[in-house]
Image (cartoon, rainbow over the protein chains, first blue to last red):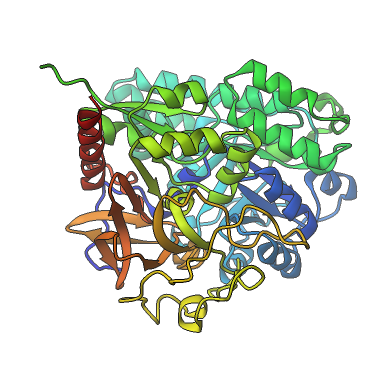
Length: 299
Length: 249
């Protein structure tokens, strides 16, 4: 690396990778075979897991970082970027993932949190992090800690899009408010949101989060993907939605197609017809007991 | 005579598209994100943006855009960035995903490249002075029997050889300076060989990273991630597009 680099006008190298993933679909996979299916279908990255969120929900107990062998097999199988999850606050898991050379770390509420007070100080890592958020305050806190990419939390493993929509709508509405605030209003709003003032100032200047904003949690159909993209998500994460459907290959391809052409209903219709199977069985959010809601993990 | 603003179309199937807009507009050109054949017709030159080359290839084939794009590229200037440069290269070598060793993926189709070319680590053995293999590996579109992709398909617009993810994984991504302008190399490919007809506009660690031949330009780095508008690379490309528009009218 040249020692004269580091201009403040250059988007940081970690967020740079997030920029490259825009307009795509990131798929949860649990085996090398699934990773190949995802790559062949046109996934822009894969998330290597031991279990998809819906199975984590069913299994109960403590959900941890996947065994390194699972992640390594996926890394060997595909050439697209490989992401992996660590528990909220579990910086030692994150260090392991970085040592393995994964391309992105998801500090994820899908796993059982390791620290109820602190998230990982992501600034100290060379590998970029993605984190979930329910609102602008949470997004700004994670960006302040060094997250290179944000995503909605949604309610993972439910096949129910309502929570992702709620989070996306809320963040959009709050950004819109911020763009109309003057300095004194902004400081008081930063206090109310619990958001770092400097990050909020960047949000106001750009009219958007200073890092890319993706959707996750409950996306199960091409229409779900198109909905999130039209609400302003720049890429979608699909967790259980693909490999818990009737026909993973078709679902993966159809969701990729609908995401690339999210603004053309005729093509989203085409994609929806190509599914040849039913989507994963969904879960009504009110049927999930409050302590079981993953979106409430982290702050 | 009033000069019309050239229209720069950025292929928007996937990748870092919108970041080009301020650079293109700062050059006095019009920016358009394009993904359909009708939109391709409207532009004077193409940017193939950074993103995932594997994904872009799949989408181009899935949406039946290969022939349409090839026809467009035959008559208009094209600039490929990172993944885009991979789509433009005549020969694309696929590296082992999790390591810096190369998979000499040509073995099933053509005599393998000499060891120095195919198996070098890129960084330690710069390919300076190397030129295109005279055997000119053709880029196959078909797959091998075991359904693993071999050499990656490409439009072959530039006689260069490109090694995908040549520097390694994301952890190896870094910045570089080109005449004082800072650029980003993100999971970037490495240009391991260029034909003598190709002009090398910039090198990094002894390897070409910015090349041009006629109306075709490729860079393995991202100038669009630098928010000093316009970048020298955008300026250079839009000059190419302007002269191509002029000579056509």
